[in-house]
Length: 566
Image 1 (cartoon, rainbow, N blue to C red):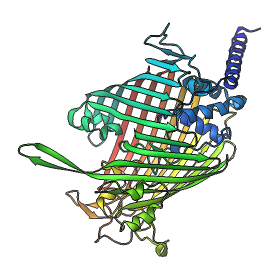
Image 2 (cartoon, rainbow, N blue to C red; image 1 turned 135 degrees about the vertical axis):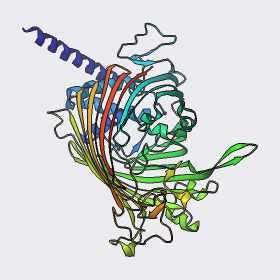
Image 3 (cartoon, one colour; image 1 turned 90 degrees about the vertical axis):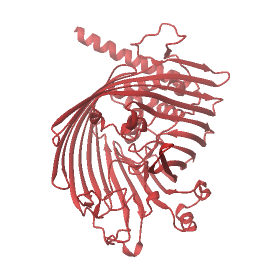
């Protein structure tokens, strides 16, 4: 027999043995509940969404992220009996995730190694690596210590200045997580970083744009996150600070990655086909600065809060629908009306003399066709029923709709995504400045401004379980407010999240009125994991912008990241 066929057959046989061991241990071991949450940027969420579209998961909904490690472990266990339906790269990817979440899936740490107080630590092994960990099954206690290091080199060039900027970013952070008695847990993350080179090159790093230390000192803090959790199966509590994403598609219209994370108290409940979500959080309002001859610079920040609740119905594994509300209020203490999860915010707002900013959200998720997932999210900021269909400024909607396609799954490892977003004028804004849908003056959802629309296409090609190539094209149209030479607003068309409707502004607000701005952007990214927990990531993008005042700009950006988890 030809040698290459012997090698291929041996690899296939080894893979079958490994899959058999996963199946065997999956049914023989009992998992230890892990109440900590999986970070929102973990690639397991993309994998689970693909499995969701293939109808291989029960009760999975990607609307709200993050999810607990215990929940992720349960979803992975659902996939073990269906492993023959996966393509070759996803079979190996499932093995990788089962190693990463071994304690949640099998209740063991046989495929985990630790640098401190460990034996035969191999930096290049495919086992899950930690600085240190402790697991005690008898007392139901587990502690895991991790570090993350990253080196990023950035090149940025735009046609307006004809200047190329470059920078190198070094950062190191530490993470600690733990669970106690199968019910309680905690998480902490913190670290520091520094930038060498031109600061202008780092403008694409949104986390640096809103980093106070970086703006003032050049070095920066890794966004601190930490929380306590309590998990009682059907009811989950969390108190602390971490990133929350709400919405379908690459561009979230409710909560995304555009603004700083915030402290919050959250509650999740589920029973059979019904689920309830809730949080109440603290935001940063508008900052004013005064100077005192003795005390120096004094910053004053308006108190501001956000509330969210949603009820969802899983009518089947293939169809989910939900409705929720968001409330923004500020310039006073915590309002107990909005701390209550089981009250209509709109009614409470009226009881509070209409001082706040409430929004209604409706979401739909359908994967009735195997390999094809349709989704839509509708956000209603304000609505005047008698003026539906007119350009009245008070009718403020966002419509986000799209699909995830894996129809060619058995033939080619390609995911196709498309998303359309339309944001009416004045959405996210408010006539009372403290009630804007912002945190520290950054929009809570995405980069998109009011009075805009977006067409997005994304292709993900999986060469192997460790090599992913992603191409994305976006076409963004924005109706900007007309400005005076000094930058003040000449005519308000509802195109700036920081400028709400004023008394002297036009009562009609046509969609995409004002100065039309167009941005066409193509990006290509690569993620390669040569060994478990070591990553090489590359990114290049080209943007062609036609902005107001006849400004035309072309931006080329590229970066390379080397990252390790230990």
